[in-house]
Figure 1 (tube, rainbow, N blue to C red):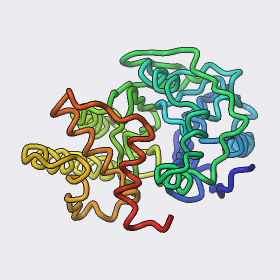
Figure 2 (cartoon, helix red, strand yellow; figure 1 turned 30 degrees about the vertical axis):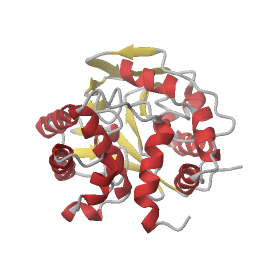
Figure 3 (tube, rainbow, N blue to C red; figure 1 turned 60 degrees about the vertical axis):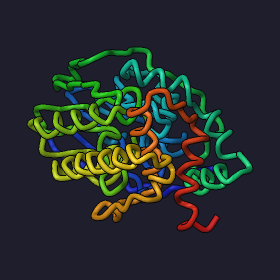
Figure 4 (cartoon, rainbow, N blue to C red; figure 1 turned 90 degrees about the vertical axis):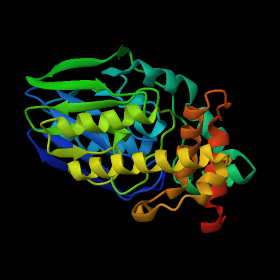
Length: 315
């Protein structure tokens, strides 16, 4: 089948930098970016399926015709930021070492399996991912990995890659273009949506927020949501601190993790979309506080979120 997601398109954010924004928010509706130099461009992330990625690449041709995409950076290993890599396989694809590990663990085959599950988890997965088409995707992994920081020259434009993970995932790269004052954050920043701490530790994500706040970059292109400012970074930081404190209090009181997620009142953060992600975030806090707690696999984590979301969703 074909994915059924409307496209919004390219937004010029200045200094040769562009954001690619989807038609709506929600799970899997990720952003991408383009940094244009004199005779070459760098693409920040591909999208969750081939139709979406193909449409983006075609729409970017007025810009990339004279500055072809020579480099692709995958900000992390979640499929909505790399499943379209096969359409740019001729380029140099770069990611942090931790991101590559995540890509090897969860690819399109695992997503097809998740969305085909017959239980509550599968019904929840089909609700949030049902518009995407994972068929025909051939996993194309990055050919170049880095650790720490990597500085690139893209047609005369300096681009800094900084691995701030593990945080959201096992490896999280922010892409900073100093000359333009622009930073592409991957999923370190969600604008208008609940951040999800698949990996942690929370302290690394908080440090990543501090790093972003200290950069000379006023334009923030998040992994999801509209182009934004440093206020959103501060809001994400506040949410993470709030959840960590609330979950720690309930852990100390002996409350099970899922009960704690049900018990926490989000206050001013309740307006964020995808609030069911709290179930994963609380589980991550509990595992930090008790490393002997067994991890949950992908279906297990989605199952926790499905249970939390169930009262509010019509399956």
